[in-house]
Image (cartoon, rainbow, N blue to C red):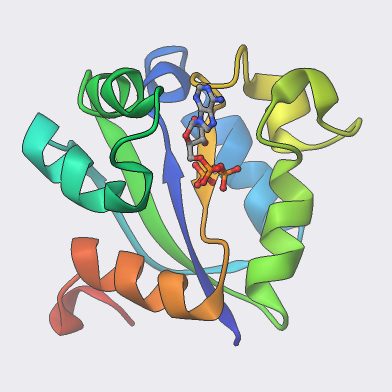
Length: 137
Ligand code: ATP
């Protein structure tokens, strides 16, 4: 697939990292196809992360994701899902490679700066969760 979906999470927005993170994304060759500054209610966060329902971190994850504004975006590039996960780095920022978004801007496993889709199928599901047809180029 040539598209993926990302969220700049609440702490990264709060710390004014939107600009630096978007800069890294565009420098890496991704084109922004849709983008919005928005927020998730607790219920919406639970729906978005429903694959993690029942896991010990689900409550913290969904509370955190609904704790403040986020940036949601659809990104386009050849091999988008895999290349974007490479750019963001490991889920645990202490294991993230040098030069990755999470190495630079994440502080912990739950406050890990960004989300990136893990498959082409999920990229579509997640993009559709946030964007209508008229909101994307
Ligand atoms: P994302 O889906 O946000 O890109 P990911 O694919 O790297 O992250 P997932 O396993 O899908 O990781 O987990 C989703 C999110 O849940 C993670 O980004 C992280 O914030 C949180 N999370 C995952 N595992 C843990 C954990 N063990 N403790 C706390 N939070 C966790």
